[in-house]
Length: 248
Image 1 (cartoon, helix red, strand yellow):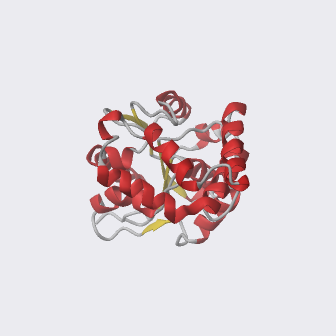
Image 2 (spheres, one colour):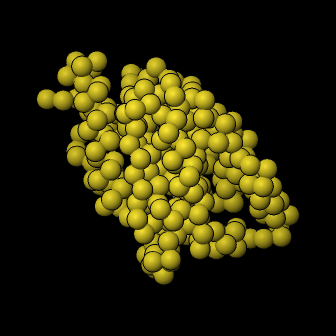
């Protein structure tokens, strides 16, 4: 029987563990899964260190969504010898552009000065993260709002600081010779498809690029079946590649 590799999942901006629920429900029983929050520190280095401390000893696969992708790449930087597989969903490997950094600073400043409430910040984000076909999905909108409330204004500020201070991670990708998945909603406005195409091109040959149709930034929630299918395909490759080394 093939051994299953432990899995580390990292949520995105204004998300908690529930952003991964559709994927987790699709996983067969028996896999060790850890979801590490991305709102507890204001650097990707600290977030990655916290995530690593939560993992069992030995090799594991890591998957990051959006901001979680930045943390996943830092996990690879800090523990390259332990990485058995990498999945990057709706994210990018570049450092922030100057424009992106300024936008983040404006939001943080508006919150800290009282110029905007956190609810207003959340409301301004929502139209940009969803495909128009999902923009009126009440249950999805309520979930996004509740996850944002759980992160809160202080957590959001820490996340924005971590994102704007992150290093460019493109130089890491060619050395990651593990089974990899790069996935993006075709209409993602936050981390456009070109960023995923760039990462897939930099990763070695065992990387699969999946473009999810009729999907914005929130791929795991907008098109859960398509994402879960790609994820399970990736994990099967991860387990197969790691099995000899794990005694399976």
